[in-house]
Image (cartoon, rainbow, N blue to C red; front, top):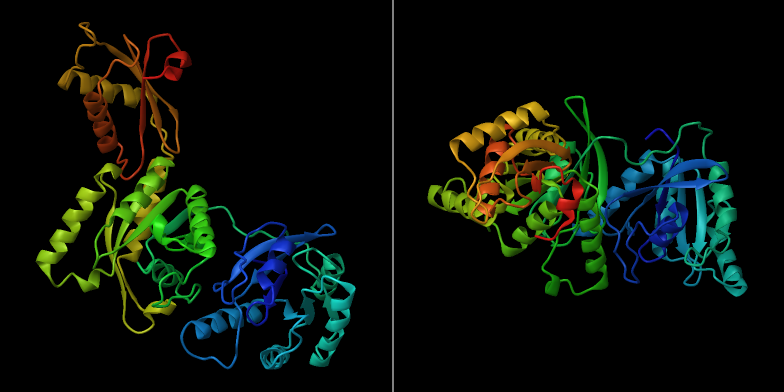
Length: 457
């Protein structure tokens, strides 16, 4: 990220995420009238007067709390402050300054970074007058705005540009690369895996279920290959997702799934594959994504051979529709497990399996090779008759990829029963190592073109 970066900080519930969404021009951060909604650092791109810059939203901080989740949020905010070129300190114009605001101001003075004070929720002239009391912070000019209504945000953007260093770099949030999304139930270990791969505490890990709220996109390089890791909120069963905030977090996780190529389904090995894990895997598969299984926390079951075998058999049975996906037994153990410095087990193989799956998803099979395999399949096992007539398979071609779509020309349209189609797909998957990806097969009458494909079965 070479473009200028602006960090938004402040205590809980002053409207930081609302301001973030206003600056980036879309509803990227989850907003709810409840303290502590934002936790991880969330980045976006803002554009004003022809210049673009990066913005990072942070969780509400309280320097007096140094344990549990508040400590993790404080650590993430401190990291954002260190990497920022300029800082927006957001306070509540209606409530006025609090002791926490004053403590945060002291922290920002020590950073020696340029600070712009934003008195938010000033949605009327009377509230703008209240915002004048914020000057006692002594951090420079105060901008009274209403992030929710856009009041005075243009003048604030002018001030932000004035505080940033000159740069010709275009702000780029997510570079090109294979996208790998980590999905699963709450507390399965998704964020632990992401931190272990990055070797830093990039996302918050806590024993409290549902710690991750927003989908976090993280550029990453593996053996000189660009990747984007996506950490997502844990997906609960629908009837358990009661609050609007949890529902929105689930929606963002599903959207992240739609924007990725490979889904790493993280399963708690001590629990095994649940009905919810099946739903997540099927959701990804039906959306044309490759799926890799991470049997995480394997260290909890590996010493009990019978239990370990039961877990693997149960996963094979529950997720058999994925067609032999890669299944990796992963663990992150030792000191620093949650902050990326623990001992990672089989994470390198997890990334390699994800890349193999991504390549299979986008593979283009040569028509000559595909027809050679089709001829062998027919010689070894002829297709069953269709309405009393023999079936001839003339040729096959790949019409699309990501995911692959194979079209077989036959003597009759849609003349193959499901079992023979599965037989053909099984051979093709085995020959070209198409594990854990959806492969579609369409049979059409010779010379009928796409009209046959459009007919209902």
